[in-house]
Image (cartoon, rainbow, N blue to C red):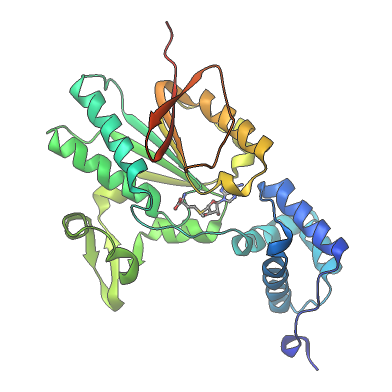
Length: 285
Ligand SMILES: C[S@@+](CC[C@H](N)C(=O)[O-])C[C@H]1O[C@@H](n2cnc3c(N)ncnc32)[C@H](O)[C@@H]1O
């Protein structure tokens, strides 16, 4: 029987160990036994495309030099969870809106308002923030003066994000006034996001594990949701510490509810707001 018609062979314990260690080392993602079938399916599907039938040979190919890195970038697209939606966690989005509004009301905006969406997937999260920021500036009759950096490890997700085109099922969940203002129906039941929203977002392919190599920029908001949950506790804490160094004094860090527990940092205070996990960088006394 030819390989493409055969059921995928089972990953042995040793192979599962090797692959999950590689995934954790390179992307931080920690798989439990429950994801074993998922890992096996994704790897074997890719092997099938390449006409390969041996997990060890494919593993050696993935860790081999420059061509291995290229293969890795294809494989990692299949191994990450990219689920996302517009306005996914409304209380967190509202918090960013209120934070900007407060700065406007108190004339505290001296330079551009800068946001970083970390693990942005196919763009729904940074575009949500861009729409909300635009609305807030407009309501205050101010020129929109903000920028959003949006990063993800997955090139496939970023390609969708950069195109800014989404199927109807994703767009119809957005409230009518925002939908009518910022989405234009195009062919085949798809919608294109308006340029005023797209132009504010700069997408880049980046692995958050390399955060210490990122340029030191000063941000007002770091928005990181549904990414750290895949990492071990110590790694979550290390990344949160690195986030702090990139916040302006008074800047805020918002992660998903319950994604980070028992983390402290002497430069940070946790703000008690129901339904939102938010930290603020202390300002100098
Ligand atoms: C579940 S999605 C979350 C998307 C969005 N933040 C949200 O909450 O809707 C997680 C995203 O994190 C990305 N990701 C996983 N590991 C990463 C890493 N080491 N560095 C950067 N992005 C990563 C995945 O590619 C995926 O797009």
